[in-house]
Image 1 (cartoon, one colour):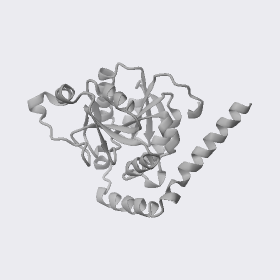
Image 2: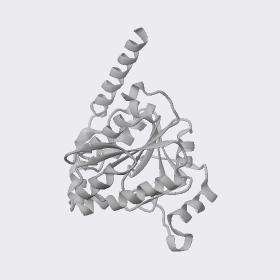
Image 3: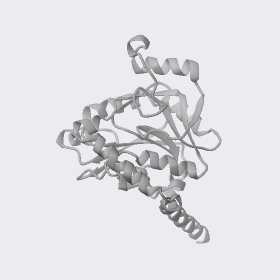
Image 4: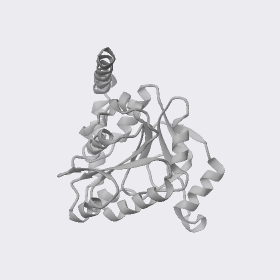
Length: 270
């Protein structure tokens, strides 16, 4: 069903691009099942995984999209958004573990005026979402989450960017911003690009400080032996070239919005 045809339904779609690493994905899915009482679905895009991960996904309780080869992170996100049925979208890496209250905090932050994207605190991410943690002292990721909710429940902080290891938005926001930019290939800087596009639309990027999500960090890049520095440098160059002229950079999103407006007008007229 096309995204623009979906009516508000209270459903949360959790979108997970995957390339191998089925053991980490299994942990992620178990944590979601344990700590997500809200109505939700999980949409997994298999980006060319090997036999072990394919066998695991064949029996997993997920909506599955399969690519024969790795189409890249942004392309997988776009596929997941198209396949999702929820009015709230949560993009998650496959190497995360959610904790008690995680989705409550993200949803509350999305209800803030002008909210566009929302992310949690974590043990591993670039930027200000990473906080020091002592799992031995606090009782692991779940203990860390309980401490944060005790002190910071409902608190939000505006930031320039929300890291794409896990972020949430409303479908209406995704429709306004348009697709993730697939020129960033297998990953890096596509989330910076998306956050910038969100902010240029007048929406806010927020951190929900009562939400905590454990992140293994760069697990797929390490396992696939990807030269991380080379990838960062290449995609940084793409990012800077794209944003030399913000009006041109935003043009694909604006065209998408105009197309959606024309389709909506045509439906109302019919």
